[in-house]
Image 1 (cartoon, rainbow, N blue to C red):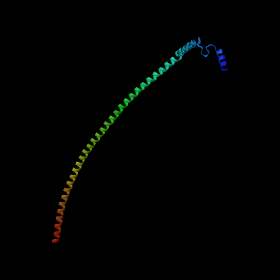
Image 2 (image 1 turned 120 degrees about the vertical axis):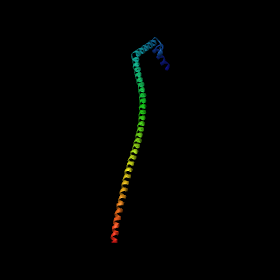
Image 3 (image 1 turned 60 degrees about the vertical axis):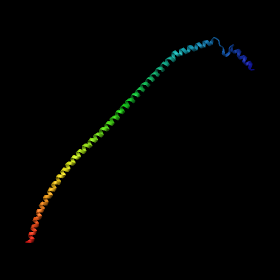
Image 4 (image 1 turned 180 degrees about the horizontal axis):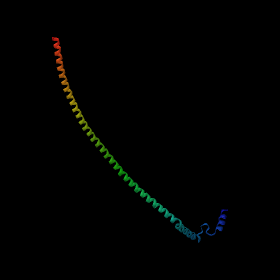
Length: 155
């Protein structure tokens, strides 16, 4: 039964059957090559040139951005170092100013203290002189009063 089906199929399809390598195979190959050539020239080449141009554009922008990033990093480190040096110099200047103002304050304080001590010594001398003179006057008054008392007692 299967044999008869295969025989009838082979008679209807022809001598080569499904794999008949006649004149159509080279014709199909030529058509395929012509189609590939046309597709290459019309579609693929312009598309590939656009893709390549876009890739070159992207690569050039990436290299430019990498260069800019490197430059910004260099500039950033440069300015950070300058800021650090400026801070150090400012701090050094502040400490020097504080030290000089402290020395100046100490000098002025010593001068004021010396003037105060001198004025205090002058007033101390004045008060001592006044005390001595007051004691002399009191002594003379006491002597005169005591003489008066003695005079009244003896009288």
